[in-house]
Amino acid sequence: MDSECFFGKVYSFLKTIRSFFQRPLPKFVFPISCIVFIYVVIVNSWVTEDAYISFRTVDNFLNGQGLRWNTYERVQVYTHPLWLFGLIFFSFWTIPVYYSSLILSWICVGATAYLLIFRFGKRKENLFQASWILLILLISRAFVDFSSSGLENPLSYLLIVLFLGKAFDLEKRCDFADLLLFFFYLSLSYLNRQDTVLFGIPFLLYLYKPLKERKLWSRFIGAAVLGLLPILLWSTFSLVYYGYLFPNTAYAKLNTGLTVSHLWPYGLDYLENSFRWDVFTSITIVLAILLLPYFVWKKKFLEAALSAGIGLYILYICSIGGDFMAGRFFALPFLASVFLFSELSPSWLPRVSVLLFVALFLLNQNSNLYITKDYTRLRNDGEIQDEKGAYFRSTNFLRSVQFQEFPTHGWAVAGRKFKKAPKDAEIACATINVGFYGYFAGQNRKIVDANALTDPLLSKLKSISNWRVGHFTRNIPPGYLESVSSGQNKIQDPNLKVYYDRLKLLTESEDLFTKERFMEILRENLGENRNLIRNSDPRSPWVGIPDGFACGLGVGY
Image (tube, rainbow, N blue to C red; front, side, top):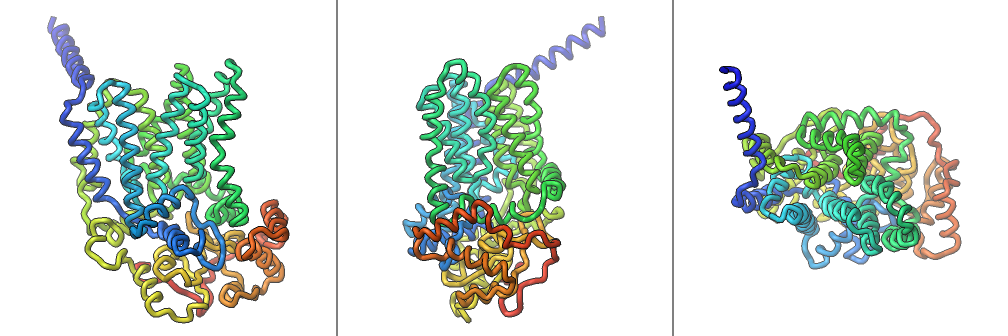
């Protein structure tokens, strides 16, 4: 009898707990969540040094120099054309590009949150129940850290939610307009960052069966052609203007002579680092991937497609060695995972989310809620760096209103110093920190990036033996800096000298539409110039920047 009474009390207690978690959230949680979300996003706003590489292109374009980083050559130094044009739009109205990036970030993050809330609230017929989404997003350090930064992440947030919303709606309706928007959002994602299309590939497999059964291939092909037209238009422009289909940054980071076997261990380190520094983000992503067999078993093929897309993206990130910015490439799969769980929407999720928010965010003194304008956290995990911790104090929004010259980082100061009193302006210089220095040194400063992100010649060469993830430095060929300075080809290696002449036809020719240039574009993109680049030689260590050509390394390096 006593045992029956005991188990009865246990059952009653568990039933009470279950009832508690299944009850709707109180309505007052919604406005509080909105206020906290806005506060955290704004006080955590900052801009990284790498963003200023794109900022220099924005300034050069608005000053009539075209989409160039160095004004004497056409090189696509940005991976995000869509984000770049957003920066150009706001900066056109004489808004400093620093604030343009923050305004655009806030708009994108706000729109992302609105779409998630509205979609969940519409399905539940109660908007107030969607407040858990805001709280869950704030727990993720990766999501908050890269909700600004000047990089393209905020726009990727918005585009992935638009794409996934349309993809999941195809189950209910699959007419021409819906397919058109499906491919249009996918193409915009590509134009913002090419590797984000990996999220969309599994959905193409999902569409195969209904298209085959309903014989809608003509509709599908027509929608695909029109929806993907932005990619075709941009690729055509890129090929004609720059001479290449892909950004120079892709060649700098993927054309290193390193194989997947070299990079994979670093990718696993990047994944391991996320578990140490941002465990909630990592566990959320892993759960979304591990649910794939369950979705297939239950024939939830849309959910399975998203789970597979998240897994595919993570595999890709690991295969390229991850990145040196902690958390950057986990923010987007985390957001996709939150979208997935919001679609599943178990009744207990809102209240569990609130408890997680309290335990992992409110009660965590290291959370982004308690950040101040003087926050600094210099920490490294092998090749991986807390990028926000390193740059936040000198680039955050709250401190920006206190200084006439901002950011206050030493590399920016070095750039301003050169611009105010230029010395040997026509002589090219080389550095490994081109963001701040390149932007503030002015548009006329000829700068060679030893990490090859902005340099069309170095990006085709093999990286040094002591490379770092995300920083695949190249040794500068003898005579190259003298060539850039004088405008005459003084490269000592005879084969590389021939290649540089051909390369200049692509990047420096005043007339874009000559037959000779088009033939060279064809030859370059078909790989017929590879024999001129001696990438088969053993990898050599970093020998440094030649004497008399170094610049940019101010206080802080």
